[in-house]
Structures are given as structure tokens and as C-alpha cells.
Length: 118
Image (cartoon, rainbow, N blue to C red; front, side, top):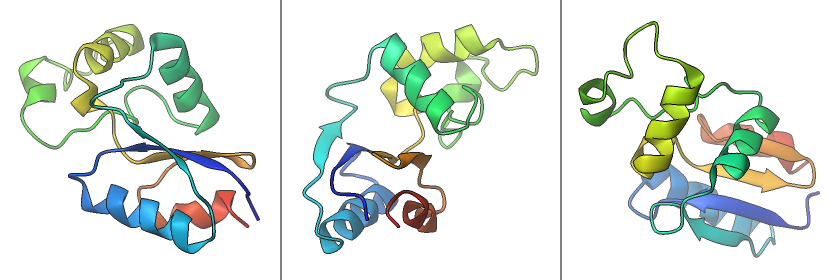
């Protein structure tokens, strides 16, 4: 069982709140990073995305209009452009992202938490 965790959390997100509760229910007192207030730097974001087995496009939050307004829905949009947009607008980072000593996962769906706790 993982002993420590960090969650990139948005308290307004029900999935993020459920993930935080699940970590606590597992006996873990996670480090909570409210990424809208304290966004990761580029190197950290790139590392999280890679370690989670994602690409910038698959880590992009596509709910809401902002991603389309910024043209991120266009097929030719580069990873660098998506990362730039995420850094300038952290709301575009899909959440929650959880880090344990067993790995990194974007908890969509929430059940993926078990992959890095067991």
C-alpha cells in the first residue's frame, strides 16, 4: 500500500473531492496542491503527464469553452502549444492527478486510484 501521496486538486471538482476522500480513507494524509492557486511549472507538468502515461492532449481538460476558444481542438495543435495553454490557464489541466511511490495517475475514472495504492 502506498504510504504517501500528492494530489493535484480542485476543491470545486466532485471527482477531485472523492479522490481526496479515498486517499484519506486509505489512511494516507496526502500533500494537497490546489493547482489553480499553485500551478505546476512546465518541467513538473511535463513530468506528471509523462509518468501518468499521457500526452498533453490526453491531459487537456476539454469541458468548458476555453480549450476551443484557444484553438486547442484543432488537430494540428502541438504538444508545446497545449502545454503553454495549460500553464497560462491551469483550469485546462485535467484533474485530479495523484502521485504515489507506485506511480502517477489521472483519476479519470476514479477507480484508477487502486493502480497506485495496492
